[in-house]
Length: 231
Image (cartoon, rainbow, N blue to C red; front, side, top):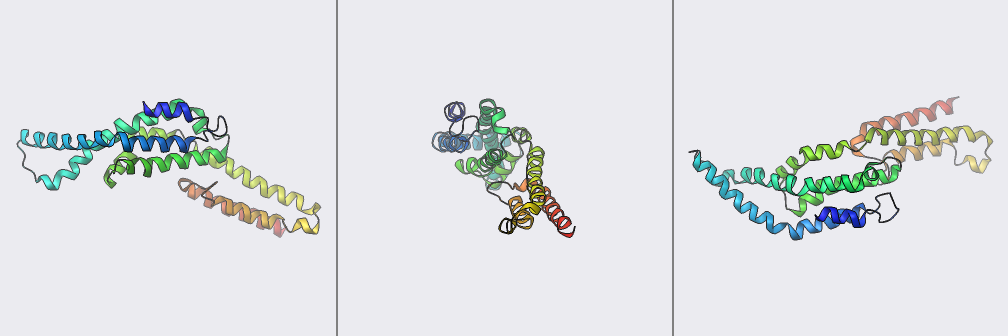
């Protein structure tokens, strides 16, 4: 399928083994879904409406078709969007990228990969099929989506960021005494401020799913600097 072909041809774009070509792959998938799946979706929307009416009539129930059309559209479209489109994409990403995609060995790339996938699932894919808000919510709660996000080791990613920033500040405090006056201008105070800023850098470090942890880390960095300064 298209997802498999894209991952096969693009997964080594950029740094080999880093999944640096992921944004390109996801863009190609969205373009394919928008241009090649739109007709199928429109046909399915028409069919599901007729199917829903037949089921209602067969059950002997009376309903206001205009009032229930949105609910019925959600029921049938989510099957296509989640099971027919997103599920094979998720399986292909996991199979073709494997440990590379979810690896925390390169925290910067892990951060980029996570943001690319989240943007794809929350915005780009739903927008490609003009999904409603309710359809987006059901896509987000789908079992395949839950499994996909479970593959990302966010606690380990945070632990690596925490260790890196705390080590940077620790090194600054240990080397400060041996620095010249000019070098001391870039001392622990400046390093502490920089590390705290990095905690909230959305482009490189911060993930909002880890907001409480990064807030706590900011406090720990501040406390570490304060303790050093007061000694």
